[in-house]
Amino acid sequence: MVTPRCKLHFIDHPRYGKVYPIITHDFRKNYFTLPVISYLGLGAVNTVVLYGTFISQVFTPMAQSFLCNPLFILPSLYANYVLFDKYYVYFFGGRSHIQNMFLKTSGKSVIVETRDGASTEIKNNIFYHPKQIKTGYEDRIDIGYGANKYLFIKGNPLIKDMELLEAVLLNKQVDVNNIAYDYDVSNEFTWKFREIVEIKKQRRPVVKYHWPTAKSLLRLQNIGKFNRASQSGSIKDRTTVVKDYVLYAFNEEVYSEDTTAPLPGEFGEIKPGDPLYVEPVTPALIERQNKRNQAIE
Picture (cartoon, rainbow, N blue to C red):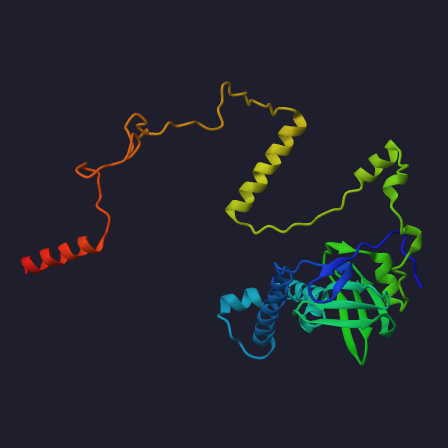
């Protein structure tokens, strides 16, 4: 069993509940698609050139003298070999490329999410033959599990807990209930100023890929100018305080109520003959109204 050096902070997974991220990648931009397409395109060009060199002429004499020359064929074949040696692993597709790996609360199994969108729960004790391949062209980790199933880790991770990743790949259980860190450290804060400064200096390098568009290049140029100006101290704050500034304005009503006019019945009862008098509805009033309507007809 492996005991982490610090308390593990679990997050909420929409499907599996509480999990701890061991390694996560961001593959939304698919930065490996272009190299694979370049390898296939260059391989097709080399195939046609070799066919025209050794089997049958497919180019014009002028193009044949340029393309079928060893000065063109050998560098092109070497570039094709380098692309194949570095990116052939992507031909396995997204089913084997690990995008995220989460540790479950039991510490005995992990959730593996691959680039094709599938997720699998794998126990720690069924991983076998983990191998790190690190050359001048390649840097990845190959993993086997189950009955002849293959996974690999490659790319620039956003999160990578190498200690727990090594423990999982070596079939070890992780102690998630680490009682040594099961208390509130806020009441026992004993860090010194120098230690805080050293912790602040530990910054994680972030690699960002920008499309070579005019908008991106102009934004990067402006960022560089601003950083250089900030370091040289040539940026000055020219903001001033606006005096007598009112957050809102009070507008008076256009129409006002005339409180001097008397209301109906304000100074006594309204008697018959008054313009505001309304005769109450009685059977006699209804009979008179009916006779009036018959006479009109």
